[in-house]
Image (cartoon, rainbow, N blue to C red; front, side, top):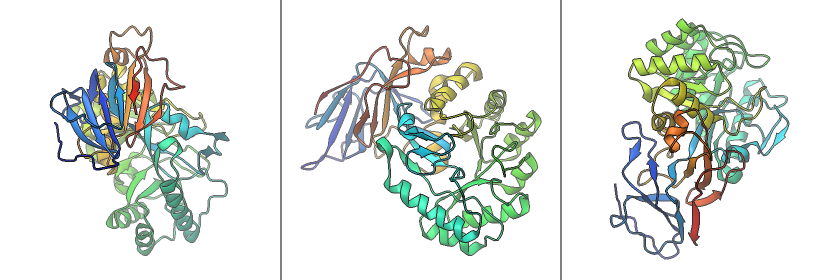
Length: 399
C-alpha cells in the first residue's frame, strides 16, 4: 500500500496521521485496510501503510488518531442546494457547514429546484444551471465540495442545449420528472443527449415530493434509463415493493437510497441488491433540504440503519457513502488510497454505546462520534457539534 514516489518539495504541506486504530478504505473489495498511518502532501494521499513502511519525516502537520477510526469523507449523492449556505426550503442558514459536522465532505446536487421563481423556459434553465455550477465551484462552506448546477429538463430542449451546457462545465442533470417532461420517450431522448456530452442523469422515483412533480413509476424509470435511479426508496413516497424489485433486477443503473425516503423500501432495495450480488450499485443520499428538514447526520443515520437492520457489515455500509458513490458519480474522492484527496473523517464509538468498538456500535444501530474532519489535507472540524461525543478524540500534536 505504501507509495513514497511523491516526496514533499520545499514549502509543501505534508500531513501525517498516525496511530489509526481502524482504517476503512471505502472500497467494497477490501473495506478494511491493514494500516495505521496515512501520509498526504498538498492535499493528496501519498502513502498508506505502517510505521517503517512509509516516510513520516518532515511533516507540516501530525495528527495522533489515538486508536480511532479513519474513513474517507462521506458523500451525499442527493441534495438540493440553492444559494450559498442558505436553504429557502427551511429558511435555514449554515446547513452545509452543519453537514460537515456529520462527516459529509462532498455533495451532489439533484437540482436547485427550491430556488424561488425557478425559470422553466429553456434559456432560463440553462442560465440558472451555469450560474449554480460557477457558484458552487468557487464556494465551499467549511471545505465541503458541492457539485452543483443541475438543470431540470423541460420541454423544448434540443440536443444543442445539452452540448452548450456541457461546454459551459455542467456535468449533471437535476431529477428527471421535476420539470415539464413527464413521459419516458421524451425523457430518454434527453438523457441520451446528456450522456453523449458527458452529463450524468438522475430520475425521480416514486410519488410527488414538491408541487409540480409527479408519480414516476417503474415503467418510466426503465424507459428513461437514467444513470441513477434517484431515491429508489421514495422521496418520500415509495413505489410498491414488486416495482422496486423489478427496478433492481431489470436495470443496471445505480440504486440510490436516501434518508428522506421509506425505510422499509430502503431495506428491500438493499436485500435485493445483496441477493443479486450487486452491492456496488448502492449509493446513499439524504434528499435534503426537504419538507422534513435538514439532516446533518442523515448519511451516518443511513449507514447505521442499513448495517443494523439490513444485516450487512458496518464497514460495507460505509462503502455505499464513499467509494461506491465516488465511482458512480465519477468523483476523485471516496477512497483511502495514494493519489486520492486527503479528505477523511476520524471517529470512534459514541460514549456509553453498548458496542465494544465503532463497528460493533454501528451494527447495533448507534451513531459514531466524530472527533475530526480533514478536507484536502487540512483540519476543518475538530469535535463535531452534532454527533454524540466520541469515546476517544484524535489530536493535532504538531503543526
